[in-house]
Image (tube, rainbow, N blue to C red; front, side, top):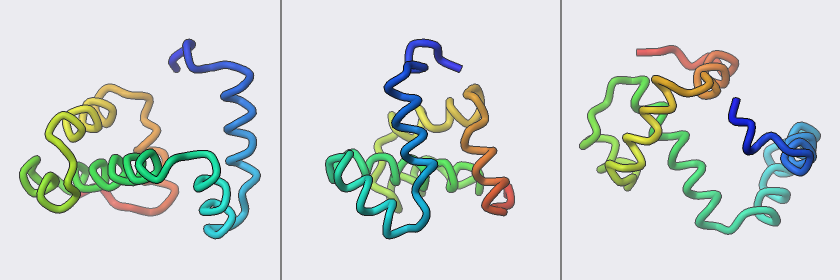
Length: 98
């Protein structure tokens, strides 16, 4: 875990996220907290991670998501060497690894 981001303020943000109870509440909260571009970037990274797990090529991912190869590479690095956050969520959501 990156100690630089583990702050009281980040803890408060995560507690707020954990209090959300529906997709509609998520939209309301995240539209207030994030810019449209920030939210779209987060969702794009998540889609890239799903496609990498499905063994899609960088070219296929770039074409389908519009993500740059730098973004795809960054997400791939997180999948391979990160804190397993993506894997934890994929498992909880029942998304099988290809």
